[in-house]
Length: 257
Image 1 (tube, rainbow, N blue to C red):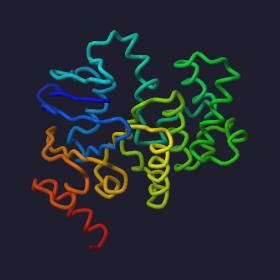
Image 2 (tube, one colour; image 1 turned 30 degrees about the vertical axis):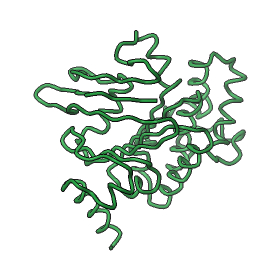
Image 3 (tube, rainbow, N blue to C red; image 1 turned 135 degrees about the horizontal axis):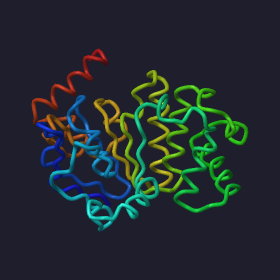
Image 4 (spheres, one colour; image 1 turned 90 degrees about the vertical axis):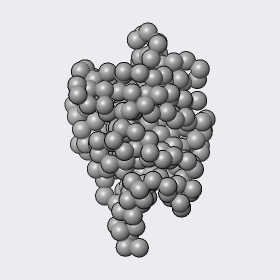
C-alpha cells in the first residue's frame, strides 16, 4: 500500500531524514521507533506533504496505491490527506479547536471529503463517536473539547481521523499526554479498530512496549536513518544494532526486569 524509497528531508544545515526506505502492506501495523529528534515525525509529515519551509524533501519517492504522492498536484493531495491517509497528532489537548463542538469538527472533515449534507455529516459524526466507544454519542456530540477528559479527547481525534474511511492511519505518539491506564485503553482501541476496519497503521513512538503490543514489523530510527528493521518479535528478541538494544534495555529497566 505504502512504499517509501530513499526519502531525504533537510532543513538548513540539518538532515532530518537520511535516505530512508520502508513499506507498509495492507492491514499491517508498522512501528517507527526512536528517540526525540530521530526523524519519526518528519517522515509522517513528508508522507502527508506537510513539511514546512525552510524544510524540504530533498530526494525520494512516496508511493501510495501506485501513485507517487510527491508528484500529485496539490488539489489531488488535499483529497489524499484525511480521505485516504489520516494523521493522529500526539497531543489531544491542543489538537482540537476549543471553540467548536466535537460534532462540528468531525462533521466538517466528513463534509470536506465526502460532500455530505449537514444532517448526514452530523449523523456520521455520531456514528464515529460510537465507533471509538464514547458512551451516549448522540448526547456528547454537542459538547466542547474541554468537557472531555484527555483519553476521551484522544478518542475524538481517532474518530476524526477515521471519519472519511482512510486506508492508512499514522498515529504520532498517540498516548504521550495520557496516564498509563488510559494509554493502554487507547492502544487496545486502535488494535481493535485496525482489525475491524482492515486498516494499515504506522505507529510513531519511542516506546518498544507499544510496538511489542500492536506492531507486525518495526523500523528503528537513529539520527534520521533506519538502523534496524524487521518483524517485531525478531527485532525485540535478537536486536542486532547497539542503539536498538539500548532502547529495549530502557524498556526493561522501566518494567523492573
